Image (cartoon, rainbow, N blue to C red; front, side, top):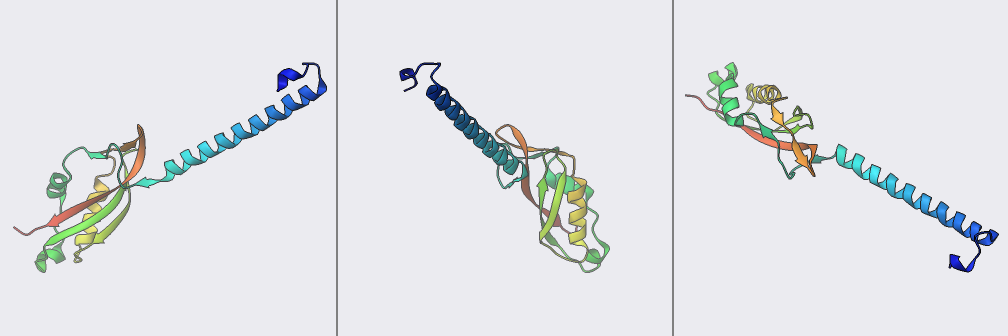
Length: 145
């Protein structure tokens, strides 16, 4: 279409200028959308990723060796599991700890303390080669011997 016009033709220059502006606007819109998507993914907390977070040890070994049985639970002979849900962040730290199912008598607080103690001892999860936040769930067992 443009070949019909001379490069000195003002109509051709006007069309070229308009097409260039349209192309620039499209490129800006695409870039803006890409940035928005990247920011949204950065803020997302995943349930499952290509490479799940890894603890430096087995979490159950960590719990067994660091658990301090709450006095009230000992006296009441309470046994069972506390289920904790938490986020392993991009730097391997822990946040957003929630007790999904508790036992009470100090066990829930002890489970929270143990999960907090795991912070920084994780290799973060990765999605598309990028470290991301991932939800994890652990069961902390309280058993009397």
